[in-house]
Length: 363
Ligand code: SF4
Image 1 (cartoon, rainbow, N blue to C red):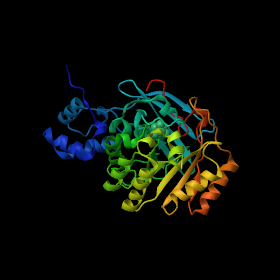
Image 2 (cartoon, rainbow, N blue to C red):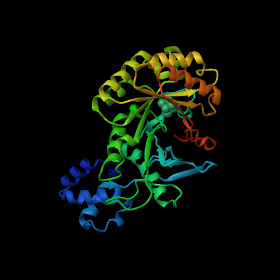
Image 3 (cartoon, rainbow, N blue to C red):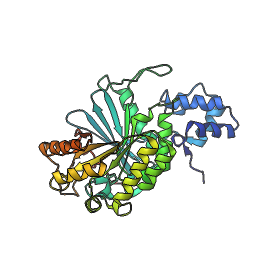
Image 4 (cartoon, protein in one colour):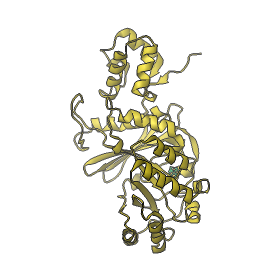
């Protein structure tokens, strides 16, 4: 029985260098291989003519250049959003979303197939958990979006596309780890993927261009704070009392609100960084003035911003989104506590690509 090849995209540049040296080849070959894949977007060994044949044969026998085939693709009517159903090597499926905003292109990528957190209004949570993604499967989603941008004809604008050593073309601008799954439940793979995505000899995304969203995995928030990783952190709150939050986010029973707030204050103090709190606005459920005041009291004094997200429809939850006026009133109350807030632009709702809508039949 032959051993399956390792996935090239699971490797950081340093891990690749060490592997190549262990094979008995020069680290120069490792650097050239890395550049082929991440700077020149080579996705096949035949596209790497400068690598010595013996080295290329060894690399090909040991490593797979895995891309994730597109099982289905949908485009929103307004043309701003595209959703990709990508096939994993074990035939499970995940979803990745490309979103155009003024002046930037953002990819919303998944960290797990399904999710174990069970948030009641979320289609992924309604599916249950299938498995963690590997670092390479997370990286492959970004590479897929990058490839789409490079193939597009001028309509998706890249503001960083050309530069020294970098071929001209369209590139991904921001990544949000807000797709399927809870990223802090798959901590090591996600952080390895972030390291690969931010590698300055490769895709070179800035850490400030990456936002990780958690539903409140307290140990992960504390670890993130201790490790000093300078990515943006978004925390899904949805309820300002333990009972209200636990009704929407079951994981709050494991990590109660007071423990979550302690971890968030710890993160802000250690990292000297703002936290973005996400609040799904559900009509008649968590959008009253009283609840806005409760959020204000809870977060008062923190370096925080609240992102309000009118509920997106899913088949497994009957709630409705808060209207524009009630959302504005909620914002106004937060302002009296010195809390900045935004109301999230709704994108891709017609193709179920909005927050909380990602799901696959075969995860
Ligand atoms: S909102 Fe996020 S954490 Fe909650 S079930 Fe959905 S994917 Fe999982």
